[in-house]
Image (cartoon, rainbow, N blue to C red):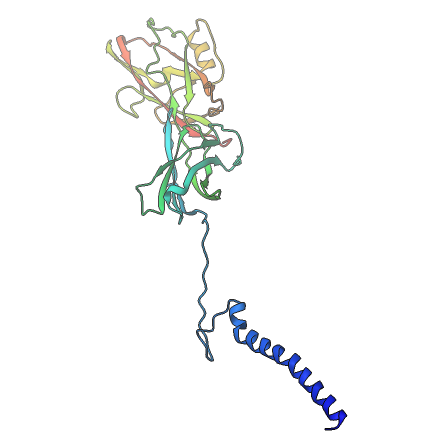
Length: 326
């Protein structure tokens, strides 16, 4: 064999020696390549269905509703009215995940973060959570407020905050109407004392208290036995046994102390009437949470005509009429 042929043969054998391991390695690698990439080829075809999955962490609570009842809120004179802001809450981490429910109840002239004021802002930092309500993921929180009689009339907002142990915080709200309240407080009797016939009584000072939530004027009328009888008092003795309505009088702005003649009395005071008459009084409703300043004085006298004797009694009807200043 020629020398060149032997050289070529050795070169080829050397090439095969080098390439054969490489080819084997590549065949091995690509045969097992899917396993190296952690890919399964169990499903093969034109359309392959591949499963997917995820691990859910925590879920925020969901406020389903905030309910303040149907219709407007009617306050109670000289007292408080319990207002319930009921909140239905759902938490898919379970009802035990709900940490706290708080609420603010405030008038449209106020704001959520204002300080509490009985006229316009109330706070409940820990509403009662009823876990027996609904299923294991649902509770009902009752946010109660003791709302005073002098709380402002108008639109009120109940703003709720729900916190859970997963560090979520959610908010909800609803509005309602607080009705105007007209109410006055007075002593049970105006006692003129002992008055001789043909004399004018001493002045009796009677305080009127505004137990509502609007500025009021006064509606005044009187009767002895039945409404509209044109009498101020009915007496046990005497030939007349009745005192006419015109002899009982009042002043809503000024006191006139001391003894008065009939003419002086008639000049300084206004006749009471059998039919109600609204007089300007302008008594504001309470604004002070620690002391009731919503009162004003009225001044009363009566003239005793000839013909009546014994003990006399009658009725004065005080009514609250909303002032245009409200």
